[in-house]
Image (tube, rainbow, N blue to C red; front, side, top):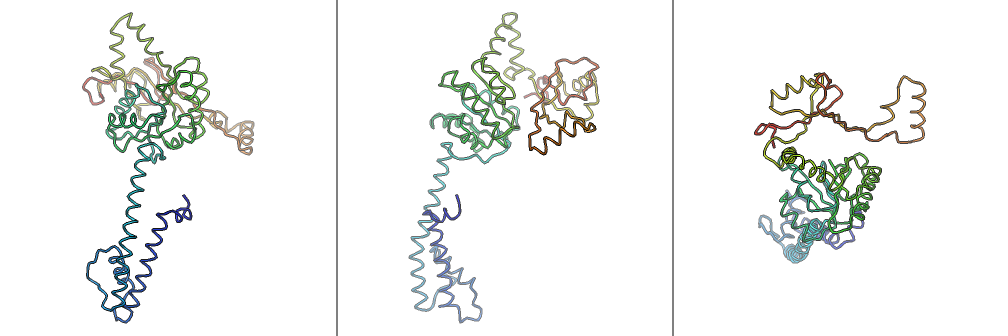
Length: 382
């Protein structure tokens, strides 16, 4: 809101009236009571005006003349009405802000937060997993959905995250709704299949949501869930980094359980549902990237008891500068053409790459991290 528009509001007019009364009463008291004194200061008159206007009445400075007492009475009577109205308006504004926040109508002022677009019954499992991977009380979450107020209150009560949980109310496919979640500085965005609507419509909203996200924040990682496998390609083209088709993994898991029920117990543990070691992400330092897979595996196994199972190369945004040769005159000419025409040199996301159980002599210099199974009861076990 512009300052000039704010001045025209009821609260703005009260602030102006209070400031004007304070200014005039300061000048009047100084002229009537203090102007002839040797140590008279305008600050003394201002102090008297503030104390009298707020009806505090410390009594350290009192008018001694009849005009001064009349002035004091007028200031006190005016102050009762103005200050009461001012504090009442401030309280109403705070209550209104709280109500708007609870209803999800305010823009979120957060950074490095996680955004969930849409809601279904499995979202609690997602949030539990995020909490396990984040330092205690550090996860800041924004849920964007058109859920009713009662359901939002139930979710907030169950999650018990306090000020670290915010809601944005509205349709997840609308850009103006998503923008209130501040996606440009978010850590990750998850797009979920929504309860209560047809699977086709849910997938359509997911596609529109990802398109809107890529307009607002081209680089934020987006992980999406869809109901129909045929829509996976559309969601990838819209800009989602990874896509999970609902039921795809559970169907394969049930098939593997037929071969041996222990398969399910193994995967439960990997996902952190069981009681033994779970799958974790472990970055590699500069020294470890100079080792071979066998050397690094032995080091990790001996130091923490964790079992490395895969080497990871993190994804990154490729640009023309990454693929063109700076020493080539033709490549330099191509880059100049792009720069002078103002064209975007981004080529999109490369990776991530995961190499399961690499050969012993595989060098780790091309990889950034490991996937390890934590040791039961060890320091890295969740």
